[in-house]
Length: 302
Ligand SMILES: Cc1cc2nc3c(=O)[nH]c(=O)nc-3n(C[C@H](O)[C@H](O)[C@H](O)COP(=O)(O)OP(=O)(O)OC[C@H]3O[C@@H](n4cnc5c(N)ncnc54)[C@H](O)[C@@H]3O)c2cc1C
Image 1 (cartoon, rainbow, N blue to C red):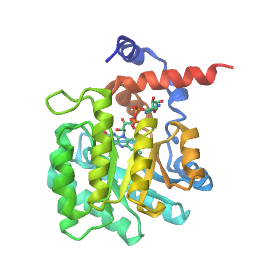
Image 2: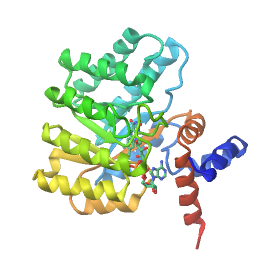
Image 3: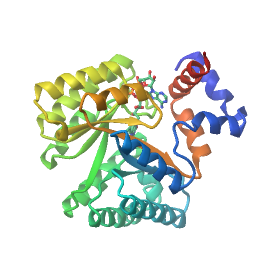
Image 4: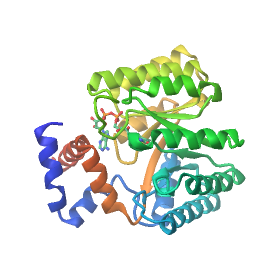
């Protein structure tokens, strides 16, 4: 972590809420479901798909987890009513992963069944390494119970990911592959920027070899060019993979991918917990603070 990263993160809680809101405004659709619907409609009109993330993973009680599931069900209704091209992304800690695994399973199953009834897909986001085993176990359990409209996320920064790719291969999982946003210790995670990039390319190759549908989630030019080379080598048609990006990040690059005929899905977070979410994300990975600061400054420049 560089000195600049550290200084930026230390200064964050002192930044007025309205300033955080303005800066995070381009990365978050808004507070309400109606804001998210507007945002997805616009993305769809630009030829991009979406995945909705209801902010609220920091829950402390069963009642809060149930309320979050209900919000997801409302989002599902809106997606259907508005005929949007969007699926859902969920963080299992928000569904009670750390409270009670069975309770979390019931919550996830409720949403996955409701989504299946509407022909929609649910992506289980991957959180910090303390949740990986339980998250994969819940995913496997739901697949074993016959639910196919769910997917998992694997993080290239984790040393275990290559073993996970091989262990999951018989399921031909639908995987979002990303670098991993959480800062993890060297015992379990690669620390070098280039090592993580290389790990990403290797994991992607192994997943495609296993016949997985992969959501290639990155804004990194090097990783993107490796991914495009693999797409060529495996002779994939555009319906056999997709690229994924975060709302508001490298939109120029996203537009270029769409122009070239690739499918692109945008991750759209929304919800009343935008402030807590913004601070937590930045504190979890101080490098993001530098990205955001750099991007904001470049937009201010004439
Ligand atoms: C659709 C999607 C879903 C994700 N889901 C998960 C998940 O479930 N679990 C998880 O651990 N991680 C997730 N991530 C985050 C991911 O792991 C990385 O932390 C993030 O994508 C940055 O890595 P990068 O490949 O873009 O490369 P980087 O080298 O980190 O970024 C490349 C460039 O992209 C820009 N950039 C990247 N991120 C940001 C940002 N947040 N704000 C502003 N600019 C930025 C910068 O210009 C940077 O130079 C997800 C990412 C995406 C795109």
